[in-house]
Length: 126
Length: 381
Image (cartoon, rainbow over all chains, first blue to last red; front, side, top):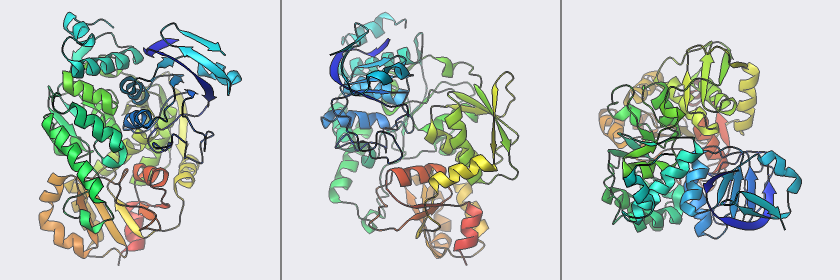
């Protein structure tokens, strides 16, 4: 696990194999995925541990991550397969713990409650 | 990452909370991109300007730092939400105008040039080859790396802002000599700018960092911009080259791949508004449009997005354009525009892949995708 933004969080793991475009795919007021073509369609990301391959699309998505945090509908932590600048800086400013790891492995734990400690580099199932 | 004593101190907050935040962003970005240090950059182009996209969180964030934050290098700005000359013709609330004005004020107070353009490469002088810059606008970053011989990361709004506030950026592979990770073999003749946009979207999906395009060369400003715009929409790829790239995987892009992307983004046969300018158009592109129209008039309203300086330079053509039902909008762009919604339009017709993507995903509009030549053929007389 590579630490990008430090911290610790507990929440329900929401895993997807699809990249996420934070600009456009997510309703920034509700934290719900609004893109019908995404496999997390209608899913709320609020207080979740969001595991996804990487972000895509416009760099303005970083502000959306900041908006999600201000509106209290942001994920509690994010785990990515590879870093992209939109997600990294969005999490850095919004102070959302972020780590890079092989997220495909996490599919098996999908929907279970986990604790991520980015500083210690650990993930535990509650 | 190795930091200097000053940078270490700034990260600990010894030079104030603004610089602490800026260095935190730079270090997180640097760690993420395997950078070994921070280096000076000489031009920053910021995104995060349109109130429609950054919203109250962005407006408040900028307002909260504007009294203390000052940019250290030349810094230019992406488009805002509207053209103040015509904003009252659209369903834009006073609240929106007020918030957009606050965002503009914040950037001005920080020392930013309020250029409101997504095509800095078309309206500003390009620095000497190899100059390190920080461009947050995705199409402009790809254009800078691929066509302008500059070096930039595909920055995010915040990493670019952090670079503006510090004059520094992480030194990672994008700032060195990056080589292609995949080759896209173009297997179709006579590509229109629409095809180039689709090729860009395709290439951005198959390439992580840099793509070699073989079998076709974008020949003019319109096709180059379509390629950069499409590529910036779909992924993390920050550069294309038409040089051959030995030892890379080859992926074919032909009629079949183009049709698949067309089917994905084309949701309607037609629409009631023609959208041109995502990325914004330059003066030569506007003059080329006038030439292509040859005195004909669009049968549907055409909204054309361009920078303020281009609108001013196009002043001698405004009458001709208005007669052709072409309405110039400065300071804003089709991408994430608040000027179009399902309330006032049934659907849009555009030649822009970037525009189509965001008008569909974000504005919820039906999109009819056609090349400029086809748009003129079908919708002018």
